[in-house]
Image (cartoon, rainbow, N blue to C red; front, side, top):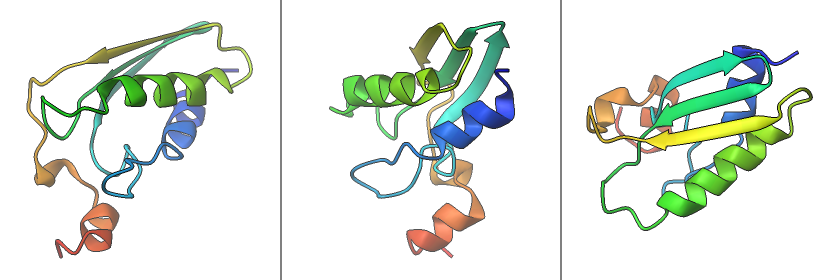
Amino acid sequence: MVTRKRVTAKLRKVIDPELGVNIVDLGLVYKIVIHGGKVSVLMTLTTPGCPLGGVFEELVSGAIRKIPGVNEVAIELTFDPPWTQELMSEAAKAQLGFD
């Protein structure tokens, strides 16, 4: 069964290659919607000009497709609202030295 908990767990394994922190704790994932076997993710990047946008889409889609029952993944990138450091979890802030 595809659940938000399973999707989130897989997304925690997707690491931002520049910052070394997972995209969930960075606050890059804004919304997860599950309809049967289709998972839609609304997410952002740390900057609109981030050259890794395509890489993240592949990594996120690949991680979610590993969940049994997922047959379709849709990734939407948005910059509204723009990402800020305040969106990071306390663990991410500590890891990056933003205590």
